[in-house]
Length: 340
Ligand code: DAH
Figure (cartoon, rainbow, N blue to C red):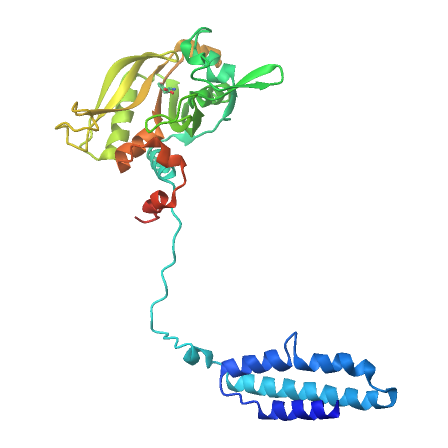
């Protein structure tokens, strides 16, 4: 035992500490969790009692010696690690890799901000909805084909039959039920339809709904608001046109087309050589809907519109395959990095 202590003592004395790496090796060997002194300390119990105290003291002083040498050299070499690692402090730091926003979130936020600037607030509703808010209050007749199993996901919830909302128009109803006009609101969210998944259809997608209820709101207000929106989103040259259409919850109803900015209306495959792209549905809120939501139709009128976020993203980013938006492929998502 005495010999081993002596040998370690010489080793500690002679251990050359010229670099930070040496110091670290020294620490591991003599002071680390598995240091070589520990073994001797555990053997202490086998030493005859009369020698134990002395050997113990020798071991303690050995440990002290190692500790002192370590702290002294550690201070001496402090700051040297930069030199050892060849660290050049003039090299610019590595660029932070930024995360990216999902293209649908980018488009949604952009659309919301356009409407917020002209006085719309935002509202939300549940994705699991009852028949009243998704259909009945919106003037869907009981036998309307949109209630059909082909389009709607039905959920049994207790005695009540619930659905996954098929459009964000359901939020209109909720807002009108719990607010007094004037109402000017935008609701964005996910909607569900029972469709086979392909590049052109998906069982869930995203919509943005707009609603404006006040005294004397007219179709001209609707048209002007949508033109303003189109110019903000697609540039000042953008034009819109309205085609008569049908929705149960609006009367009159229209389909809105925007001039195709991809070909400057010369005709391309995206606009199918028509020069126009369909972007949303809209109309004057049907009095039946206002009545169902407790709004006095003698005093108030309003307009509503609804658009698909994927559709707008397709036009802005030219990403036509709907599946890409929900596959979470980072090679796709990375292309929408912040600031790009
Ligand atoms: N809810 C319709 C859909 O899902 C879109 C829509 C059309 C919303 C006309 C409206 C509207 O508010 O006025 O296809």
